[in-house]
Amino acid sequence: MTAHPTRAALLCPGLYQYLKGEWKAGGIFFALAAICLTTMAFYARAEADPFGHQDVRLAIAATVLFWAALFSALDAFQRPGRAALYLILLPAIVLFSIFTYLPIIWAVKLAFYDHDLQTLVYGGAPFAGLSNFADIVHDDKFWLGLSNTMKFFIIGFLLGQFPAPALAYLLNEVPSRRVQTFYKCICIMPSLFSWPIIGAIWLWILKPGGQLDVLIEIVSWGTVTEPLPWLGDPTTARYVFVSVGLWMGTGVSALIWLASLANIDPSMYEAAQIDGADHWQKFRHLTFPLLIPTWVVLTILAFIGMFSIFDQVIVMGNPSIREAVFVVMIHIFETGLRVGAVGYAAAMSLVLCLIVLIMTAFNLKVSSKMDVTG
Image (cartoon, rainbow, N blue to C red; front, side):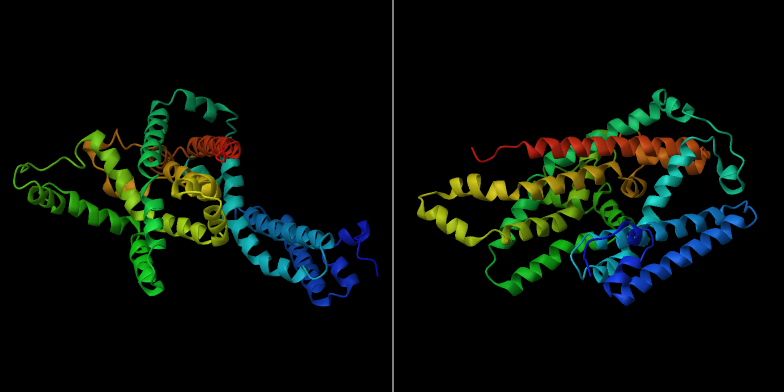
């Protein structure tokens, strides 16, 4: 039997696998498609639901049908034996699509309607077109939040370039694997706690006359006795927020750096040493170029993390520094859930998502042209 797919086989999910003799895989793909089509037909003919449950069920069934049909078709173009791998991957992809892609599509729809909390539940919101996006241009709070978010990213980018690689290098130099594992556990512990816990700890440390002020007074031999405005001064607060975030996430970043260092073939260093390369030349022409992909990924993750900063500001913020730490996510939250302008909040979310995508693409473009071998 030929291994090349035919158009007729691709029209029905599971048919190609069935024709190849993969009965179980073909049966599962076909059963999923049949269940989804039956569900879609049933709810498409049902009476309208004012709470939108009918549309949600239709969207979920369509999502499962889409991925089952796509994986069945992709398997037809792959080498034999891949159907089981696609079936293992299918539940994760379906769940990710339901809880990620479907809300994004729903947010896109909301952005073009003048929704409030009541119309969000019962429907009947008027079509707003592009008016929600036009209002963003004249929204001073949005641009203030975007400016503060960019300041957070720039400060975090400048302060975060050294701690994680340095920590990874120190961990890599530990000869004992057991001791290294112990240090890894200590480094990763801050990231295991949620922001309410982390924020409460640092609020206790940074309060006037708190533990950090006491430590500074001891180190300075009593020359500094006045409490420092860690979270009372707007300029200082930004650096404090970023530093606490770096303290929380440096351990995870260091483990990623450490994994990249461990994957470098030691024979490459031996060959470079035979050629007469010193320590700096090894780092410049070997270590650094091989770690560029890791640096790019971590930079993108840091950028996305800074643009989605929210809970830290909620937990550690106070009225005296509100304007300095007022980020876009806070404005979206207050507009959508406190003011009730859900459609406008969805429009701001889409604009923010577009900015992140553009900056990420720019980062990837610039990093792909970096020449570090010269």
